[in-house]
Amino acid sequence: MTHNEDRAAAAAAPADAADIGRIVQLAFGSLAAQTLRAAVRLRVVELIGDQEKDAADVAALAAAAPQPMTRLLRAMTSLGLLEERARGTFAVTSAGALLDPGQPGSLVSFARMFTEPMMLRPWEQLDDSVRSGDVAFDKVHGTDFFGHLKENPELSAAFNGAMSEAVRQTASVLPRAVDFSRFRTVMDVGGGNATLLSGVLAAYPALTGVVYDTEEGLAQAPDTLRAGGLEDRCSLVAGDFFRSVPEGADLHLMKSIVHDWPDERVVTILRNCRAALPPGGRVLIIEPVLPEVVDPETAGNTYLSDLNMLVNVGGRERTRSEFEDLCGRAELTVTSVTPLAGARPFHAVEAAVDG
Image 1 (cartoon, rainbow, N blue to C red):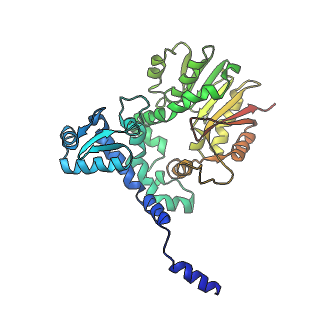
Image 2: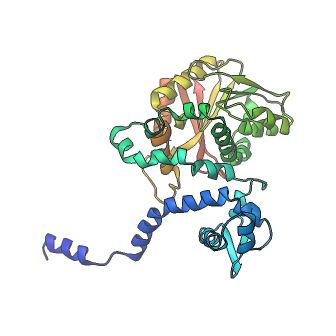
Image 3: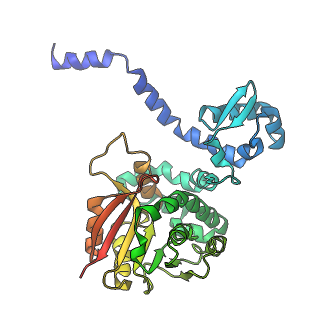
């Protein structure tokens, strides 16, 4: 059989059912996201609560039509958010419970933000961003991502809430993964509402802390510190880390900051940290660390996050060698990269002040 005949035979063979299913699942991904968005906006999980509930009752509570609500509940069941225990009777699963803002560990703000049209519309221009390297968000909305949030306080508060939910698991894991007793004062650079630093300070009573962020980023931080009884051990400083970083800390902590920015901007932030740190000071970067070669079995959503950085903010996810390069350009040396068990795919990248 010739090479062309081999190719013709392969083309004539029926496609593998699993491969077909994979493509269909991917194509339906945006539909699943919109199902999630509708469930959050209609407060479906809150309305069902911790008891079984008939679809007609849920519809009445949500001021929705009964038959379409039943269809939504069944779609949520297919996604693992609910279970249909009898015909038309639904209960919330452990995953679905994360969409109730009253439940510990809720991810409702995260789900709302990442299904927000503001975030999704730039994805329609992904092919253009791949061709040009340009940030689609700026073209779609006429301003950059963080500028848009500054002009829309409600969206800014929702974003802060989503980031707080996203960081909560890391805040519980990080103090066990890294020995913070080596330090006196930790500054969370770009630390938002102080969720991450609160977790560290609670685990290390001898530490003091500083949260350094924009005024918008710090808006909810006082509430977080009061809730943890940490007002006396942590101060809030507003500023711009592209201009400077305050002195006074021997550790600078940054979570999900580096991936927001292109390389040159990251080097600027790191150089400002390096200038403010004393001899022996450290920078601790909390980010996903991509393998040098993609492993599909462990990739998770990190590569989708990488594309999200491309279309919405202009940043990227990075490999260890890329972190080492950025730190080296800022006169910092990466001394360790520690996977955060229980908070995958995040790692703690520790870098020391050179000299």
